[in-house]
Length: 178
Image 1: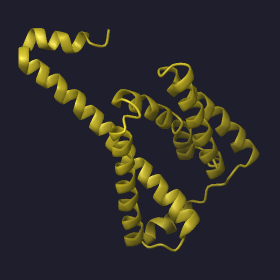
Image 2 (image 1 turned 135 degrees about the vertical axis):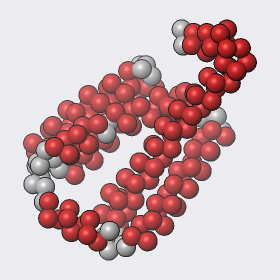
Image 3 (image 1 turned 90 degrees about the vertical axis):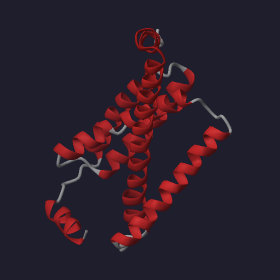
Image 4 (image 1 turned 135 degrees about the horizontal axis):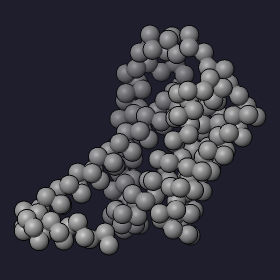
């Protein structure tokens, strides 16, 4: 079923169609993976390193840490590919669980003053875990759905248990330092 478009492109456009489909698919995969790499590195740099390890780190130090994390994540990705832990399609299916578990923390983080860091972190951790396990044991198509649903439920529960009151002045102070 998922080969209809490539076969149609080859039939209509010949070798050029095959090249075009290949370039389109590789471009979309590269774009997705580079966004995941950058987003993950930013999360690890800001939320883990800056907030938990070195609160006084300056912008240059954070940039260096983020570059190191990107390099490490890139090497980890190469290792996973090298040892054939999974196909590129499988890796993308797993990334769907990661991405979908971040939807609710981002949406509520933007629009709800009571959204807390604890709710965001726990919902992403538990949602991603549920999505990855669903990918492994049930269906790769169900993984992102389960990740999003579990992330939402966990976010709501933790937000009620540990609400926050977002401080716009603190954000302005952080932006002024950057």
